[in-house]
Length: 254
Length: 261
Image (cartoon, rainbow over all chains, first blue to last red; front, side, top):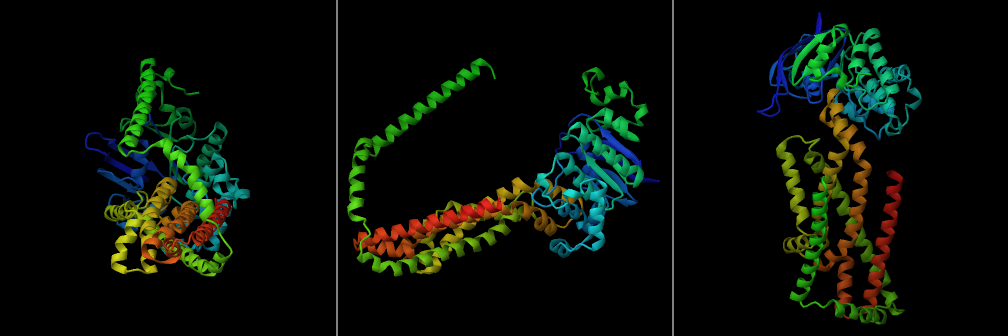
């Protein structure tokens, strides 16, 4: 059974340029799916349509048997609480400590007042420390986030997504600002999240080889249209050319 | 950028400088201001200041009254600034592109900021003088209004600059508006906001003197009174007190800034 189903999705910010054209795909629970494509292809917009950070114009998105496009304010909050998000620039609050940033992930389940007063249950705090330990950054729990390296900050970002206990994690270019070592750590983590914890991951990527190595399935996007879907074994040179609109030897694929 | 364009750019700089020189010369000619004469009077002015603006023994008798007025003025400035800061915090949050509730409130907040900021404090003091009369409430309001304008503008910019990314992240977790503002925006911007408030406290203590002259209250009135009585020795003492107060406040706020940033 599919966790996420996108049908005929269309999006344009301005009347003359359409960002997403007639997008169809399905994702099953526990899969790790990559979206690849050149800059400006609409990868980020596609991701943000799923949790309605961006309002889409046409089409239908079904997440966990809920119609995403047709939710009231409270239901939308609930939807977002069930979908974690990881960003290229981590999007933490730099002046706050690691543990505070992780616990921000629980806001979706709290009343405004509980959140403002920082009333977290013991179970939530234990869970936060458990996750930090699992991701190997528990010794930094009380440090301010701006003192951490990029890779560590991204792990805090993933912790924040995980503590939401989401069914789906959307990752918007999670390794685009990281060095190769940290990138590997983060991608390994995402892989284990999908296989061990059974959380579905939808990852925007720039690196074709990374996408091929880690994902169960790949979606290739070019100029707002899906030009390829399939497993990484089915992604041949011809398809890569179609996605990026250029020859493979002109691309850095390592 | 090619060579031709670079050469053109250099010429533009030269022409721009020439225009400024010509403008300066023209405006001096029109207002019949002679730069050399102006320079020549400086020693004389300094001489006058040294002979007249001296703190003498008998002026020290006035010190308690002066200090009382000075304290009144200082505390009024601090009160005006802090209350203005609270109002500006709300206007800033509503006005910022990142945290706005709706477009109407955003434009409204920016409009208030712009109106109160672009009318000088002196003008506010004179306008308010007509409606509220000659008392310290007028001075307080004049400082308050000017400060709200400035601080709202500063807060909007701090919020816009510092919190876009974390607001996005918290929205994506399903946080409510007030959770986002209270737990991401404010903690991130607070040091910068405090820094602006301290800056405004300093500025307002200085401005309060001028406002006091106009509204007839506080240390400004004391200054004005002795000035008009030609009692320059007391004027000197008042000025000295103001300078010391401003320096002390400056040092204190610099220390606070160093600790929080």
